[in-house]
Length: 182
Image (cartoon, rainbow, N blue to C red; front, side, top):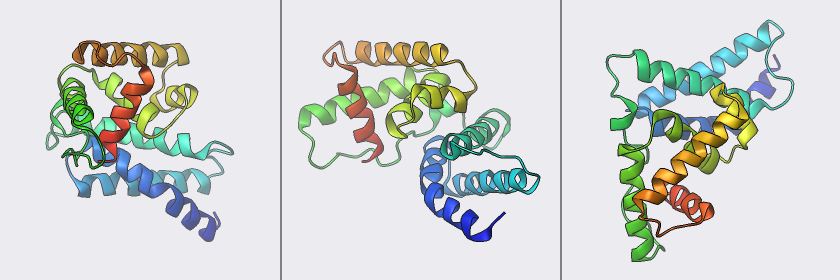
């Protein structure tokens, strides 16, 4: 419960948690509230001698994931995930070719309309937040093999949307990251 350590943890992880929550929530205010709730829960865990001894980042995202899912499923004030913008700044991405911008539009449409909620979460955690398959499984409360299946199905769906113009997973990963950093 060292105050300086908690401040350092907050400064290190809050921006990434905010981006994650903001991609999935309808407002900046709600995303900020979720980040606050994550650190409140972490502080509560530490105060009773619980909390992670290692792998703090996945633990924080696991808490954030649960809060986001609660927000999506139980709040009557929030839109369903499939109607929320996953990437807020989806305008043309500087430095990308017209072909890549077109591919990004196709992928974004497929993400919104054709992927399941689990598939969206896996893509965000794996390709944008750069979590490993094992960490993603921990955050989502799923088995590693289940996360692999979900990821493969999501990528297959995106390839189909692209009419197999992009064959490599790394190309789809590049497109997803480009959308997120637009």
